[in-house]
Length: 516
Image 1 (cartoon, rainbow, N blue to C red):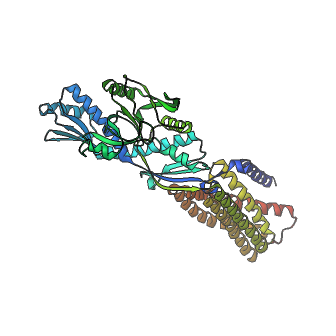
Image 2: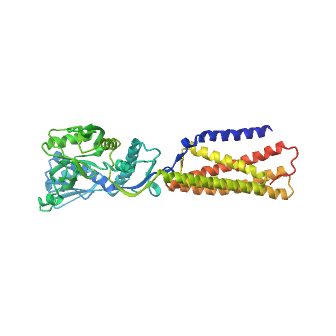
Image 3: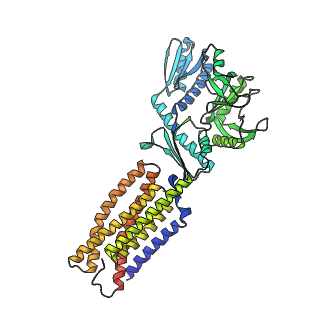
């Protein structure tokens, strides 16, 4: 009896512990996107942009190193997204050029012909930059979403092995999808570029000033719908500084008293900013966000470590912009590949439908067990109820997210829990028909059925592990609930049920029959 009391005490302790984990259910169990409502996005990181930024920095570095070495040249440009081209350099300084490349551009291959020196980024380095760009974009988006206040977001690389350039973003409970989209996308690439000409009312009018041929080393950028920023600008192709050089940003006011964004630069960014502003006083510097000129102030003095982004922002827009800058600039622009918004009412309907299905399945299983296995069916019913409590408690403890497929996983685990009881009970029936005593039939029934139950559950768990490893969102939710449900059913069907039988036999003086 002491051994039996110890087993009962253990079961009560386990159930009490998981009940504590589970309550209150509304606070402890997190709901997934399909139940709570929210946004589902698939984003593609334009990794060519990241290589362009590295190439732009190489252009500036090449100019600086050639000046130090006394190598004369016409200009240094970026060609495509991965090449640096030095035009009309002093051929007598070929050895100096080779020394510059060897000491400063180990990640680049070089070639020269017809007065041009060309650097091309190595394929393995380009691949590494692309991978880093996607990882940085993932972390930057996560920082922005966390600061925005979205609870339990899912932000991960999409694809087998997590090597693609696409990101899956799921944001449960989002009530303002457009603002979140803007927050993710804003300042995808922040660039400060010297203005060569503009603003001009139309792109065609700007091009006509140059006989419809854009000058080498420049590009045309559209202005925002502000006052002096309307129209089109001709700007230097190479950025003076980018969002990667920013240290901090905060909401401030411009000279008109309108919301603006103040920013501070890192040490290297400050050095580059000082160099550009000191050498180009009187020129205009375009502040470009997402390929659009937000403002183009004149450079009146050398500036080292700070500046202001003026636009025609509302306070919320300035706040969101400063937030995205603080959390880090995205290393490349973002393309929306897929977007779905799920309303909270649809999520509530899913919860009601899922819970009704689960309750209906539970009731039908209980009725079947009581009718088919008579009084012994009560044993299975108790085990089933405890299985549900333990499963919900485990979900709460591991902070798993409950999704609609997760509810399906719970329903399936209920069926598998009963399946284990059915295997055990049928073994007991066979032994009773063979003339064995009740105690012997129960002991042998649990012992012989255990191997079959363990094998079948193990194969299911392995399948669920693969679903969790390679699935996303709801599929992971299904896998988690299934694994937890199976573990709980092994405990309740193989351990709790046997203890209940032992308790029943201990309470009766003579056990000659079993209602099964």
